[in-house]
Image (cartoon, rainbow, N blue to C red):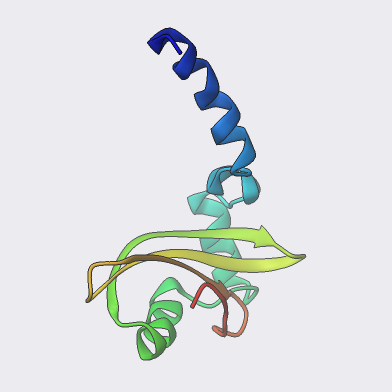
Length: 102
């Protein structure tokens, strides 16, 4: 197969892998919306969510987003664990309970 044709397969491979993480939760809150949700008591603070996560998965927080997922507010956290692995974890933003990704 000529090299130019092998590149034509790449979009198909990426399409079969499913939606990108940003597409899965396209309804993430802006900074002002995040502050309002926390002030109104609809979400715990990011610091509280990080503290609860740290008990289950120690490591360095690389990215955090507050989004709507499965009909509720969730924190989508990306963590670099002490063993060098990158893990994506979902935390319920109202209770701080880890609900996915461990």
